[in-house]
Length: 339
Length: 270
Image (cartoon, rainbow over all chains, first blue to last red; front, side, top):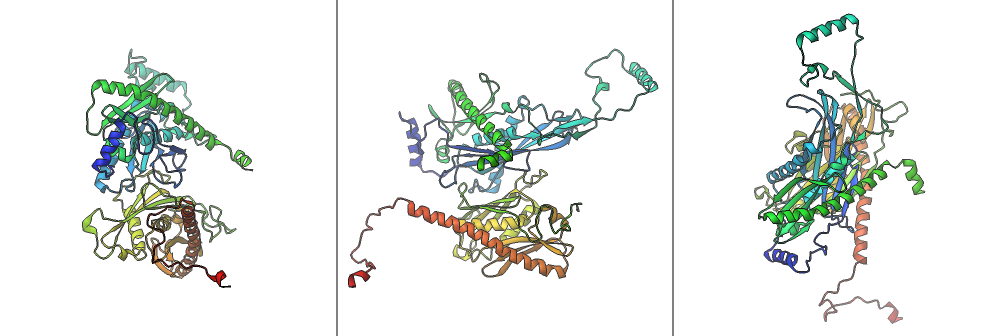
């Protein structure tokens, strides 16, 4: 994670950030991102997938932070210790040893556990939960696995993780299901019998929520005939974006490279959700690295980070919509374009 | 586990429309990735494997180093979404370790490890998608990644799987065919005509083995052609880039007193 860096290199990077005309080694401004490339639908066996790269060297094709994310749906029984009513989301981050060649396998495990915690806690929060992960009420639901693989880390890994997770979730298609139930033809005698039983057992409870008699009794489901692999996951606009502010005394900058991360270790992760063009909410906030911040400073940082996150969100949405169009283009149209 | 899909139908076609000896589509991508010294992605049909090579470099665990040759360290990871059923395999999983051990033993006699004593060569194999022939794809991708990393080897290593359906041999099996037929993976060195790996986990009649083995060796030679074309085109590109780049003037590199220049004097004499 930490690139080896000399004292003078460190001092050089720090001093140039604080100068009146701040400079970065690759010529970017303080609030500029590297080139971001994104592709969805990279894993054909997943329900949704995306590959994100920050700062790929255009000429050679190498370098940059690269994350692969994919979602997979599994059916679960709703039982204590297993599934939950309305489905659940589990995030897992795996780090390739090639991304951190200097780390031992134990250190790598710890690192991926750290990433997993942040991603899982943020994305599995009830406020973001999609409404269409249930299959049969109180019986079966979908388990949404979000798997992220860090293929290489060249700085700003958190932004890349959140962005790839968002893209993969955006791309996710949920198979359309329909609950089926066997309803026996009711004879009058049978109905009379149940009625009497009801009145005998519960009196005056009526339509209380404790009344278990009106529980849906569907016990199985079928996959309905649908024109596509499934319907897009609901509430996909809500998936958050993360902006990492790298803070050095009064200055801060975005999208740090490995050298910059090594010389300025204090980071503030802010994860935003944009529900409408005007409103936003913070889904997660985390201060990583040694150092401290004054309360007024945090307030200022939060205020100033919102526009960056909004820009990122808008740009990402545009790209994701482009990808949707690109992938849903009919084969015959593609051939027409080629000729 | 047997399926009701016909492995080889009366017309001589397999379940994915291939003929008996037909190999799947191969694509080779040798673009550099991350900070790796060499990397290669190979796809055999729907099987996709990415290999990154680091080294030769100082070993992470000093106690493992050997005084006379380099240590080859292979780590395999099967991505959780690579198969149709999601399954997360840990690093200690038996299947993963077995695959890593097979790749390691295949390359130990091929890589010239004695050139780099007390160092380590790390090979990280990522299986992005699996549809049969994991070992085959892993070995082919490792060969290419080692070559792009510039690590000296005696020869290419080209691997291919072969199977037998009743009496007819098949090549380059998919998962479906792997589950239903006895199969063998063969890795050959095409230039020296040697075999570095034969691995079989199922039972196969002795009379059939010879045919499959011979066929797999021939298919290996075909794969070798494809791999060679990819490596050559990459090298050609690199050489081309070197020529187009700005020529660097090195101070002190002007003509020295004792330099002898071979000049073309043919025209002066006549």
